[in-house]
Length: 266
Image 1 (cartoon, one colour):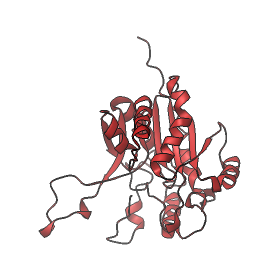
Image 2 (cartoon, helix red, strand yellow):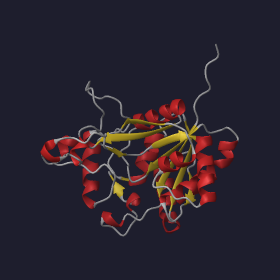
Image 3 (tube, helix red, strand yellow):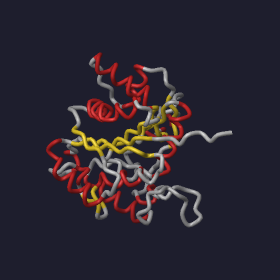
């Protein structure tokens, strides 16, 4: 019996935001994190996977010079395709998908992964998890339960599960491209990739476990937390179990926060 063909995935890194809440005039994804640009950590993490055959980075035109210098210095071959984003997250995703469209239509890409470059600590095993789930089910998003945010009176929990959605999010390439083409024709702007897929396709989207360490750089203190998480993980974002402990290398978040505090996973 012949082996199934290897999965081929494209990773899209969204880095076109301004990030004013980070307290810097520079785009937050260009800030240094443990000696490396914030956005390059997740590029390295994703590209550890043999299945990742294409990489697209969506940027602001104003950041092009700094981005290209950082790529030349910190990211080796194969080349990362750089495209300029739009005025919304959705339009930035659409710009990336148009760049990937020839390869998708030629059958060279099976899955597209969309990731916020402001989440530099996404581990390789999380990328692998959403890619595998997208191949099997059609789409996948990582989530974390947030029941503590919605407790009812007397400490009762709501009947519906409340989750915070993270990236990377992965989807079969063909339906994703078609959904964004239909959205473009309609003038629809989705809040995230999954919302566009839900509107224009019947592709099921599986929720996979997110990671407590997969924080988003939003405020100045997030950079300090990310530095401490990286140090705790020995700067290893593979996601492999380390020191015979049955937990993610990035699962030490709760130990680094003040007692009773919660990290904002959004």
